[in-house]
Length: 185
Image 1 (cartoon, rainbow, N blue to C red):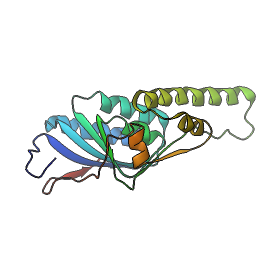
Image 2 (tube, rainbow, N blue to C red; image 1 turned 60 degrees about the vertical axis):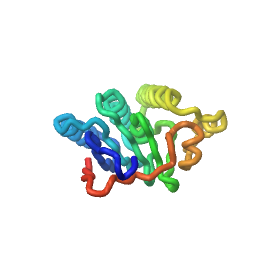
Image 3 (tube, helix red, strand yellow; image 1 turned 120 degrees about the vertical axis):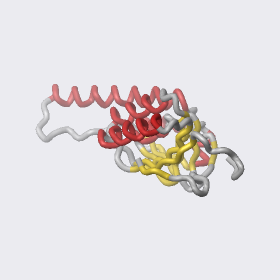
């Protein structure tokens, strides 16, 4: 937006930390305030190395279905399940120096775990991978080389690489207009 544009209905936020139940609650509280304040477009800068799959998917589903336009930004690092949260943005931007990382789910088995307990852990990880991959495929067009890397290790993408695969709509910084409040969620 240029300096002379009207920012009625727009608000700017930062969201950082682990994707967990605390973040879910903070986002729910912030959205309650947004609706009360009649916000139509929420610009959200996300900084997170990830966290819990179910909490990330919850936030993705919640934010992407709101009657508020969500615009997400990455100015540093959005990794792991935070990438799924980031994809909730109807528009998505990343600073030139920002990075993304996606990977398969992982967990540690308890010492001495029996085969039936290990099977339950594996089935849960496979279910989480299927959910996150479905969301990724709905938004991003990774190359076959990207998918092969993702299959066995961490896939890192720069902002320009993210633009090529549709993870971002543009390489641009989070720059709230002068005089506008920025609220930390």
